[in-house]
Image 1 (spheres, one colour):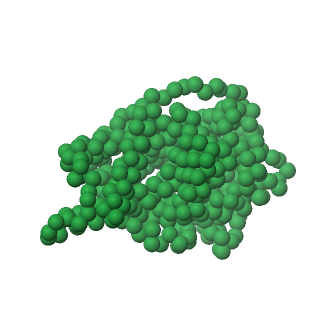
Image 2 (cartoon, one colour):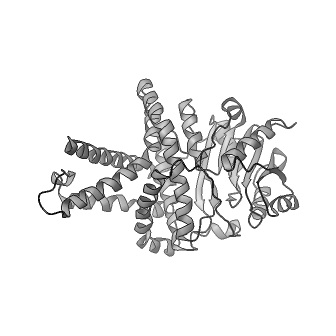
Length: 410
């Protein structure tokens, strides 16, 4: 019985990996089929900030020069439990500082929920709400692209997420590689096939009417993933805009990166526990593959966990004296075939860099250390599983002040 379970789990993990590999082929080519529209939509631009006085000014200056009529959008910065001069910097740069004090309900999700309630009570109402983090920079055509998607029928849109500082360290380079891969070979295929895309925490655009209907309600450690699940449950499929780019600052050190990714995985376990089975069952009943695909994405954190556990168990079983206790899939598949499979999977990363026309040779050289970054997800995910009930939010400090011209060189 135990051998059957071990074998079924291995086959299941292989099937999920093969599914994503096949799906990635739809990201090789970009189709430009979307209709452009003159500016029609008004936007409330929300920036989430906690002690971000060093970087928020650069973002506000960036936002004020977007290629969109200035009277059609307002910039609000949520100064969430700030103890520095963030609010003063915001006002000095001509944006609206919305100061929030609540030490009990800490975190971006709670801050957004509070801000939306404030927004709905204002005299001016907006057609849509876009959200950024204070350390971001935004491509000039961002609001034009969001306007186009909203006019074309989208209700929730995720922009292309890029890295502001990929050349700062091997860790930031690893983030850059991951983002280029996810944009091109995860998000683009789903857009091409009309499936739901995944929200990424920043660069998100929401139709105001939908937010008022649904409420925000996403207050977990991964509010973006949680809101994605809620949308798909309602039959609202977030779309992906390849041409609207948002550049996000990434932590410089492995320790800071591990802390950030631990928080993500803790939140991911929480969302998977609450949404996987309901969404999967809903997809099966309604025969909606998009809902099944989104449910599978929500549970991907368990794929990482199970891969680690079963790999360790099988390796220990192999090196112990005597005949192995468990059956491995490699008892039926040649080792060379598994090796070729791993190489094919890994080659998706340099392929993504080439497809995204990354020019810096340093980014290609960073692929030598990239496997260490990938392997580090296993202990982080293992730790997150046993600490998933820890919902305390931790702040990632941002200090890298860059301008848009600096980050577009990569």
